[in-house]
Amino acid sequence: MAGRTGLSEHTLRYYERIGLLTGVRRDEKGYRLYAESDLEWIRFLIRLRETGMPIRDAKRFSALRERGEETFGERLEMLTEHRELIEAELRKWQEHRRKVDEKIEYYRSRLEGGSPSERSGTLVVLLHEIYGLNGHIRYYEERLRSEGMEVFAPDLLNREAFAYEEEETAYRIFTEEVGFDRALGTAREAIRLHRMRYERVYVVGFSVGATVAWRCAEEAGVDGVVCYYGSRIRDYADVSPRCPALLLFSEDEEKRMTPETQRVLEVKPLTDVEYLPGAHGFANPYDKRYDPMLTERAYRKLAAMLRGGGSVR
Image (cartoon, rainbow, N blue to C red; front, side):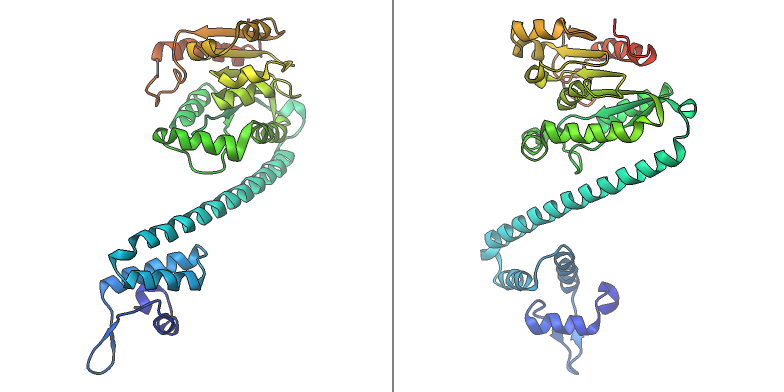
């Protein structure tokens, strides 16, 4: 059993002594006879230990397990609480990793950046929806790269992507744990880190990412922004773009904006506003509201901006 679990014989005996491992049979000579169920349980104990569950809680869980099905509810509650702690730790370590990645990118850019004449062409900073870095964003990464552009997609959530069936949870996590200000800070940092390596930097965003992209239009070092169905742009109508901005709204966003907000956006300098006859999410191949024709129509405008050095008209 020590060989199969990686635990020492001493640890296995200790687990028995404190009640973590019970019911191990012995033969007539006193040798322990472990069953496959013992192996499975020990491996689960190792998982609990490695994910930070204190010994006292593991002992309590083990005691509940010994009592059988009547304790399913209590065990479920314990594991649910433990998972929340694991997720909090994951978010913390993902944030640590992001900061280390930023430093790595900073030093790499300083070493590789060279003089302005040696900079690369175009970088697109790609900002995702509430769901995170999923197939939708990978689709646009590949498409833009196929046209000779570099793409950087920062993780605004610092966690694994949500499934589309988890829309309510994804929205709650973004609004309660991330928010537009923090997401804007992440986008700003990405722009700052990459600006010196590229002749032109554009920001393209979808949904909440579109609202963040719109706010990036005020940032120095941004050559243009493209915003796909950013419904919350209506809350930031006071943004004064310093670069060309292309706002691609669906009929859903048009209905949510007051005529006054629409007029404010439409008369802003450097801003091109277009309302497309589709639903929110029309440009996402993985969304049930995907509209291929509208996607191509919008993409042509996106590509024209990127190739035209920022002009939207």
